[in-house]
Amino acid sequence: MRVLVDGTPFLIEKTGIGHYTENLVTHLRKVAPELEINLFALSLRGGHRLKRMLAMEGVEKKGYNLPANFLYYTWWPRTSLFPAETLAGDFDLFHATNYQAPALRRAKLVTTVHDINFVRFPEMQSKGIRRFIAAMPRLLERSRVVLADSRFTAEELMEVYGLPEDGVRVVYPGLNPVFLREPDPEEVETALRAYCLQPPYIAYIGNLHPRKNLVTLVEAFARVRERGLAHRLAVIGGGGLGKLNNTEYRKLTLRVRDLGLEEAVVFTGYVPDQRLASLLRRAEMLVFPSIYEGFGLPPLEAMACGVPVITSRRSSLPEVVGDAALLLEDPLDAEEIAGCMERLLADGELRSRLVRAGRERAKMFDWEKTARKVAAVYQEVVEA
Image 1 (cartoon, helix red, strand yellow):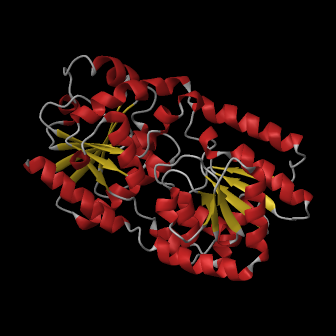
Image 2 (cartoon, helix red, strand yellow):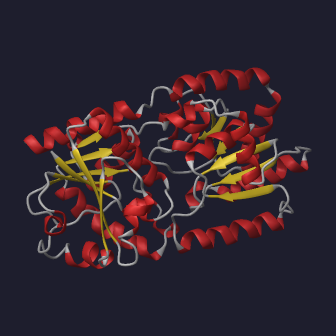
Image 3 (cartoon, rainbow, N blue to C red):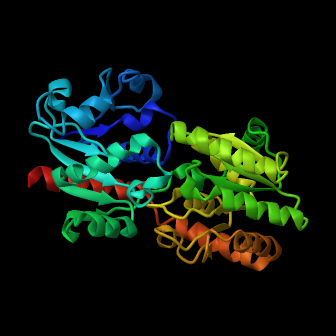
């Protein structure tokens, strides 16, 4: 079976979708070596970058310097001329992991939907995201099977788009094994120096999208600093949002300055997984007060590293962390976040319980298990 997977997430620094796609393809190669997997990406400015940005043994990278936005959002919605087979040759299935799929001549389509935050929070999006909203109904209609990262997202798809329950499969992402391995102490120290971090610090991981609720986190951090906390706050990640990221970064740094926290808040920018695992190992806790997630990997990554987690009782997050984290009833309440941070720092027994429970919880999310389920869906769709 020849499968094309959307390689668009690898044309920029990897965000959650990039990590999902890379780990899925890597583990499909392990559990289903009979699959011939190619990556497919269009970009007028950098389709060729796919070949040099991603080293993945046994996977052919097909990047084309073509006007992707015109093809995906103007040409292909109106006509099936110039299908993907014209560029890539015949194949059996296209897996859309990034909310877009080319016209197909014969191949069948499987789509992964990570979340629909752009529908739920249109006021928080960049202007370009409107095309995602407009294109989603047709993408879902064309898909033989839709994969959802969580039961929460599956229910969102059924509610908003009217998808039948048997047309949506919940397949949880796995956890990159790098977070389960104990890094070398020297490697940890190198990572700390590289990102100008010195313990003790509290960590946040993710991009700077407004739904991540970082302004409230910064305000909560200001309160605990006023009450004597000496820790720093490490905002780890960012990027992948285009102009929206720059706008949100400016807003956030202005708020940090207004609160007098310039020396206490460290923005690391994008951090690769190997280094991220090292930074997490030295964090006192992860605080992830997001108001909407289709899955939410950072809490899982922290738990795998033995770091206690504070996160929101919203969207998919309780589904991910179970009883292995402190859950915020109102993540928009800075005082509640501050109180949970202080409680976790003061209560050693609570910390120990969350660390133990978190490590066990993290073991449940395995990429090989995920890849086997996805490979079974491929087989089912192609044989139907």
